[in-house]
Length: 289
Image 1 (cartoon, rainbow, N blue to C red):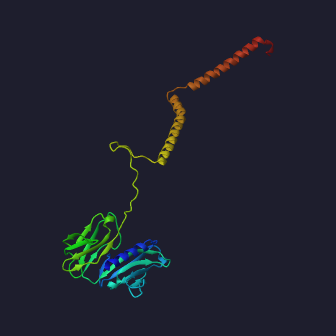
Image 2 (image 1 turned 120 degrees about the horizontal axis):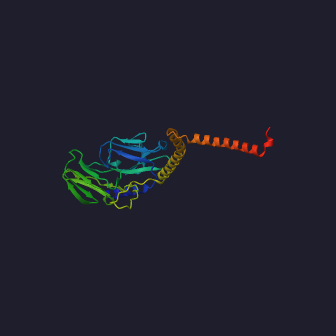
Image 3 (image 1 turned 90 degrees about the vertical axis):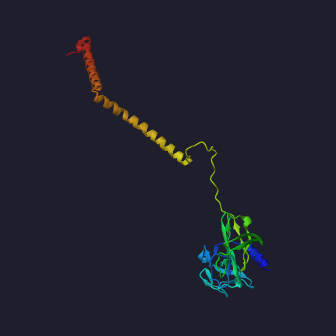
């Protein structure tokens, strides 16, 4: 009958979890099982404070009730249960006025002397999970046997068992047993897919060859543009600097070819003018006064 109740609760969790989640339910202390009389705080970590989140539950009682309706003490978006009873076992979730609900957790309260401390929230694939089998009155380091889906997994001398790198195959109902003290209730452990990012494309260049890191097309375009500008400025500086260098070399070297050429050309003009005047006198003597 207990197994039937657990399965029914899990079916309800699966159906209600299809609803859009806008809040996250946390449990403190973080455990899926509690002893009778323990204190528990449940909080709705809300994305939208105006949504008016309320903690609700579905237990063995006939009606779905909210925090404050005969159980728990509401404190904003949280609910504090100061004394847990076995009748408080059931499914808990946060619900807003608009209808969306949060993730759901299944809490079990026992009047027995042994509980299994296991993750109350789904664990991520690849993570390590530690289970603790503890008693209410004695130290929690007693030898314990751990079971999954009714089959013995292993016996641990200190009451701790760690499942390394969990996978989907590790999902199931877990319980533990301490000889001379009793058996814990069963709790379901859920494993979710690990969120991975797409790795960057690998280079096809052989590992033995070394090449400098490649630049983006934008960087190459900028470098090409700057290279063209620098080339243009260099050519412009060379063209503008050549007359100045040539002129400076001529002056420093004492070369006055420009002045000699000018004087020579001036003398030639004067001589040519005098020759023309002499010819004019010879050819046209009557024109002289």
